[in-house]
Amino acid sequence: MSQQKVAIVGAGPAGLQAAATLVSLGVSVEIFERNGSPGGHLKQWHALFPHFQNATHALNPLLNGVKGITMHLGSKVSEISHNGNTWRLLSDDGLKYESDAVLLTTGFNLFDASRKEEYGYGVYPGVVTSAQLEEMFNGQRPWPFDKSLAAPKIGFVHCVGSRDVKCGNRFCSKVCCVTAVKQAIEIRKRFSDSAVTCFYMDLRMYGLGFEELYHEAQVNHQVQFIRGRLSEASPAVSGKIQVKAEDTLMGRPLKLTLDMLVLMVGMEPAVKLTAQNNHLALGKPGFGDGFMADRELNTPEYLQVTPGLFVAGACKGPASLPDTIQDAKAVSVDVYNFLKTKS
Amino acid sequence: MINFGYTASESRHIDMDERLHPAIEKMLHREPSLKECIACGRCAAVCTAGYFTGMQFYRLNLMAHRGLINEMKQAARACMLCGKCQMTCPKGVNIRHGVLLMSQITDVLDV
Ligand SMILES: Cc1cc2nc3c(=O)[nH]c(=O)nc-3n(C[C@H](O)[C@H](O)[C@H](O)COP(=O)(O)OP(=O)(O)OC[C@H]3O[C@@H](n4cnc5c(N)ncnc54)[C@H](O)[C@@H]3O)c2cc1C
Ligand code: SF4
Ligand code: SF4
Ligand code: SF4
Image 1 (cartoon, each protein chain N blue to C red):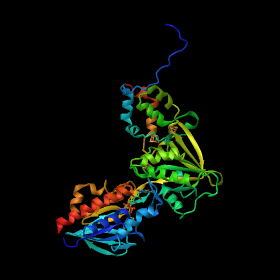
Image 2: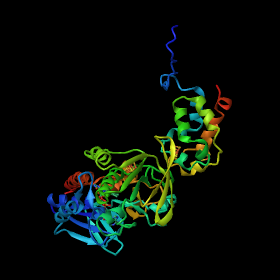
Image 3: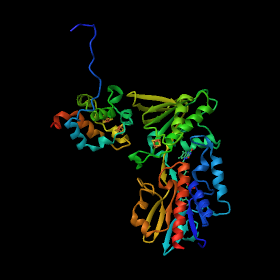
Image 4: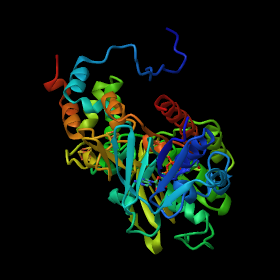
């Protein structure tokens, strides 16, 4: 097979893994990434569930795998089109690239927590997101409470922006339950006299080692789990936050004063594909727009008119890092087989 | 009968072998969103009446699904139909219509 070319959109874990796999199969690839550096969301995380693996240790092999591959950073792809067998990619910075296939690995955006106004994100400094908490663990963001505080009280709200028709997101974001459990344990380790409470609707410990982590949180770290969705957060004395919820197992309303409230923000798709004749625009998703797997790419007619377009990773729906890596490898083989039929 | 000095209490079992009361079936048909409730409790946490009366919509809805029609009807009377719960429900349940049907169940939906 002569060297065929694939354009990869997005240099998150999915895009990096796919690039390395395709190159190992003899395909030439170029990567386009809207940010100034590769790594996607993985580069923001501190330690990974369920074994507290250092996130940098997970990212480094992915970065090493793409050494020597052309990567266009700060290059946001806004449009792709195809003419016969050739794909043409256009980025916001005016870059054009022609290839035999396109692989979209555009991943997800974090849910904008200020949309759930009743939690006061962006209004009360003590209300933060799960992603910001990772930055605090990494030392890249100050704690919103005095670190010398003897016994900080910290709460986690599950399902923020997920499983919620009022936000247009019916789906479950899949990784936030176990992320909350992981972060709760990290807080307990860092602040030994802290009290941590998780407010959940269902605890989705789907992966191997997740249920065990939940057990560890309860037994070894005294994390409290309360089944009930928070109704509101309001300011209390000296920067504290008062939260209200229904304790659905007790069947009684509950209130609690906290030093920090962590919102487990869900995932939303990063791009929405819109087809116009032979070109596809990569635009901003609107209210209720789902992920790619349950949207455009599910319709067979759509795939038929666009042979050579592939998607991998969390742009198809919420996924953990191992899921993303596996999917990127599998889709790379699909891409390879497609190229083989063409050569 | 010999009196042993104690009385037997009524069984607390919820009898799931019984067919759901036809009026409840009708109600779920009239307001199908009731079936979407996941008992997260937000409706109760914001409820204007709940603070003092123990009005908990999700519990009424559970009673409906377990066939506890009399308890449900009785408890539904505490609702003031203000609709606060409905604004906050993540599943988009039409709570006000649901409680209205519950409170009048044997009057308007009897079969
Ligand atoms: C709070 C939180 C904690 C998590 N912790 C863990 C954990 O501990 N363990 C674990 O296994 N998983 C964890 N995950 C999940 C993990 O982050 C994802 O599985 C992973 O990031 C998915 O990789 P991806 O490449 O598909 O998407 P992303 O990481 O989102 O990467 C997509 C890339 O595409 C780029 N892009 C998007 N649109 C364009 C465009 N138009 N043009 C060019 N580039 C574009 C983006 O800038 C980004 O760099 C966590 C998720 C969250 C939300
Ligand atoms: S994983 Fe847990 S916190 Fe996240 S959306 Fe699903 S149920 Fe909610
Ligand atoms: S808020 Fe909606 S989903 Fe939650 S318990 Fe109440 S009715 Fe059910
Ligand atoms: S409509 Fe009824 S159940 Fe809902 S908040 Fe008002 S009083 Fe409570």
